[in-house]
Amino acid sequence: MDFHIGKKTLTRNSAPYLVAEIGLNHNADLEIGKRTIAKAKESGAHAVKFQTYRTEEFIDNSNPDVKFLFDIFKQYELNESQHKEFQRTALDLGLDFFSTPLCESAVDLLCGLDVPVLKIASGDIVNLPLLKKSTESGKPLIVSTGAALPEEVTRAISFFRKEKAEICLLHCVSMYPTPLNKVNLQSIPFYLDTTEYVVGFSDHSDGTLASSIAVSLGAVVFEKHFTLDRNLEGPDHGISMDPIMFSKLAEDLKISFEMGGEYGKNTHSEETNGWFYGRRSLYKKGNSILSLRPALHTKDNTVLNSWELDRAGDPSLLQEGPIRLTPKY
Image (cartoon, rainbow, N blue to C red; front, side):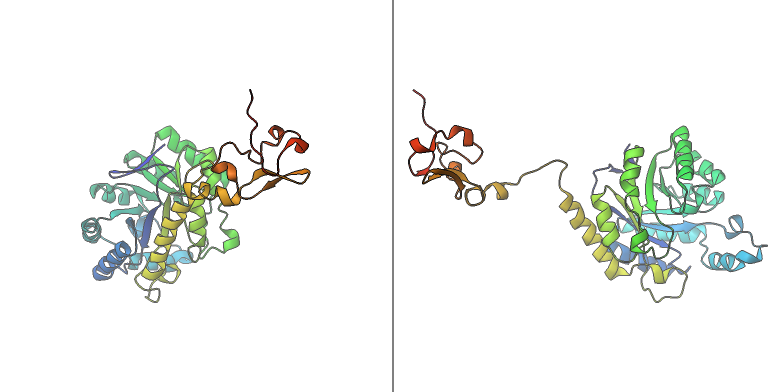
């Protein structure tokens, strides 16, 4: 099943599509947000993603255990006007713009902006009211699976199939940063084998290695936290890639995709051009038949190659040197 982002069609064989997860790293500041979007474009992103919510609608402010979380999200809450400014900036730069709705009213806001897709956060793969609202929008959904139990992923997939929702499934580990021995990239071929969806990777590990390997395992959509400066004040800057790091990621993904080549055993002309020196023909040396370099048969088709031992005949009847096919009269 192909996945559509606006006019783009992504298949399981598409080149990597890289999303800069700006999230809260705009610091609720229009200028910081716009500069971050511009740097994301400059650093090789195909899309920028934000988070959309009304804090009161997804965090219980009366619970003292999450008061700190409420305060963080409230500080970085974006209104509709700010969304429009960021969307305009992204589109003017040729970037796709979308966001993660964290409450039902956020879905309405994003649909009003006509974003091409909605992103479902890992924590909301078990949030049936939000999933219902999101599928009812008719928008394609990018769905992260971090921290979800296998049966929870299966349950969500069954729901999406029932609703005939267009899905891209992202492997994700909800650890910040994810230790390399916990990245579990084999989940990517598992999703490819057990679902019909385009699969991607929301990468929370340090560096570019995990994502580069994920390309060869079949991931197409990539998401990585992005910031102007890892030293800025805010909850996610320190776990995000800055422009230099993100540029390396974009380049490594491109190279990794090129390295994958095509399915099957594909032989290049540059390889076969070396057959004369690297392969062997049959030669008579003394009373023995040997396979020796150079492979004269590559230039003279009357000389036997090293696989044609059964055609060589009796060594005692042969002349010294390359063994040639005896013509039949």
